[in-house]
Each structure stands twice: as structure tokens, then as C-alpha cells.
Length: 288
Image (tube, rainbow, N blue to C red; front, side, top):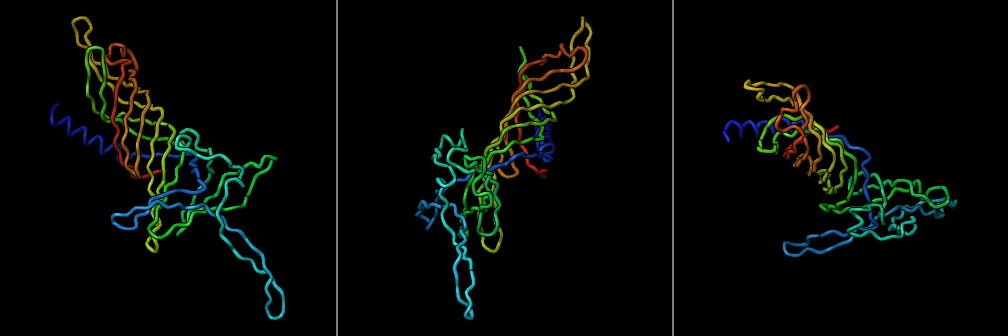
């Protein structure tokens, strides 16, 4: 392989994926009654601890002020029992992958100061209404403590496949190019919430997306018609699927599919309808 081709491949990878972006739909977290995490007490000792989901109860009491009785309300945090929310099953490692709702609470999340606030989706009570519509649950973290919570979402990724290996009937070809496209798929991952007192909290997302890919690019090839070389300039579409792993803004993935040339004489292209394997590497400068 020529050095110029290698340099071009690296340039295309960095340039095209610098504009990698994505849109997400219906992101929902799956909350557990308690989460076990590792706590490092020293350089050599790591112990397991449990963090429980809490809710604030309001208690009324009567106090006497200047000879008059008045009502006061105290906020008392207590552990949440899922059995009171009609959640009586226990989640397992298997169900967390294939049936995330089992034994868990579907919710939206907000991370503020030392608390991860949990606003649950409506929970049917079995009588045509819903349980605890106004309850706000939360996890309370200590300084430098982190907590990982799983989520699912639908994702639309705008991406390119600049590195591609095409498999012909008699020949395999390595190509570089923009091959602009989009992948719509299902995403599952975890958010690591880190509480840092006074200096600002951090959130780190790691996730895997699988889905369908469709892309397009320019096409130019030559074929022999009788004794004369013919050149065709057209375009092709790529249809396939892919797997992407993302950590924060960095993305690494692989795509697989088939190329189909468009226009007259596209059937003469030696890679018409043939499979290909592509590599995707990117860094997102923005999301929307």
C-alpha cells in the first residue's frame, strides 16, 4: 500500500468524523431499590457498600409558640421499598440485559449537588390509576463517590465509513472515501455519576449502539466493452448494519453491508451487490 493512501485514510478518518453527531430519543434510566458499589478505603482495601434509593416523607407535628399551638412539618428521608410500588420481582444480570423493566423502576434523572433525583415514569396501581404521581426519589452521594445507572435509548447517528474493504468475486479491494450516511439503532449503556463537592459534578456515558446503516458516495469505475475501455461516473448506495461503542464523545465501530451502483452500466461494476466491511472511528464535536 502506498504511503499516500495511508495518509489519505488517516486524514479522512479525522476530518469526516470530527463532525460526527447524534440525536437521541426516549432516553430512560432503570432504577434499582439499592445499588452495590465498590468503595476504596485505602490503597490495598476495597470494600463493597450498598446505596439505597430514598424518598422524603412529610411528618406533621404540633408545637406551642407563645402559648399558641401551630403545625410544623418535618422532612424525613426513608428507604424506598419497591414492594409498595407494585414492583415485586427481583432483577438479575440476565434480565438487566434482556428485560430491563424487571425489578426496576423506569425514570428520568437529574444530577444536582450530592443527589441524583429520580422522577419515575407513571406506575399503574392496577385500578386504572397511578401510584405516587408526585413522589420524587433520590440517591444521596458522598464526596468523590460515584454511581453507575443503566439506560436505554433510540439513537440516530450521522457518520461516515472512510475505511472500507470490498469483497468481489475474484478480487478484494481496500478503499477510502467519505461514504456519508446515517445509522438508526438501539442503544444501551451506563452513566457514571461522580459527586465532587464544591468543584462540580461529572457524568460519563459509555454505550453500545446497534442498528441499520444507509450511506452514499461517488462511484467511478472502468470496464471493457469489446476492445474499448469505458469509464462510468455515477454514485452508489450502501445498505447494511453496524455496531458502535461510544465513551463520552469518542466512538469506535464496525459496519457491514452491500454496495449498489446507480445508473446505466452499473451492473458492470465488479463490486455490484457485493459485501463490504468498514471501520468507523470518530470524535463528536457537538450533539443535537
